[in-house]
Image (cartoon, rainbow, N blue to C red):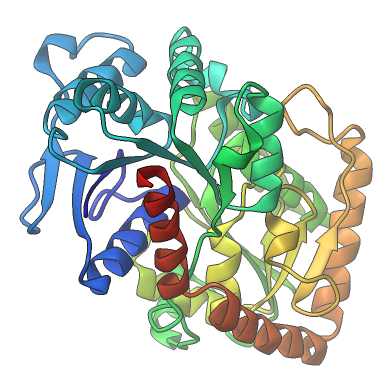
Length: 396
């Protein structure tokens, strides 16, 4: 079976969870031996066998970013002829999958990593392009032979956002984790280089500076952390100048009232992220929108307890009272996911963080339990098999 995997992100151009998912899924499918998995991704031509990179069209260099994306998708779709299945990831590649399916007659499978109706703040980032990205996603989802949701929570969101989709077309296949690559590994040199004190407890955050990740809420909650606790932020790639300015202002305010606030704005190699996670007391995931949250699996695989928002697919990963703490949130139902009462959410988040850092032994037990859960329930071999079953279902 030939399956063409279509994605904006693919190594070395990975900046989010969808890119991690695609990279690991391709490895799992190719390891089976019965799948010709061909990758078509945005960016420069690739040296990897079976992988093709697609540059943006020079004719659209000055156009809206969403139009540039559609241009790449069209060139990508033209090369999919001959595939048995096309499988697209995120709206960036959905248009390629949809057009390829129309052109070549093969079934189109969509993986739901996020949903445009659940991220209305992207209008800030894309302007009129948000209407285009929303059109692309809606058209692709409603026409797809199957939709793969990365969590049961995401499946609910898909059917809520696109009620015309038949429920039996939406399958749940969780994201996964490579527990051999993501494992506890201490490295004092990395801590020293980034200004982290290995002898102090710390709360770690890893994520892009975007509305959905909820970093401003964490920065407000951190005001209530005990003074000896460090806050280590691996946070970069801001979506907009506005969210960047807000985060910068909150970090500056926090530094005026306490020390131990470490902000690392550049994207770090995996080994350095692992070293920072391995040195932390607890991982914080204050997201207001998270279809599953690979970042929580990565922290758990590094034996780190997690404090996370009880939203989206997070409760399917983090078990409250076993691998971490789930923070309740009453969210607006306008698609934004923002807390109805932000002060209450910040207070509950602060309470959970204080409880986590107050008992390092319990946090350590939760971290070990998290590692076991990541290994036992989220292996890529299993996820590859379940994805293959979806391909077979649309061909039968």
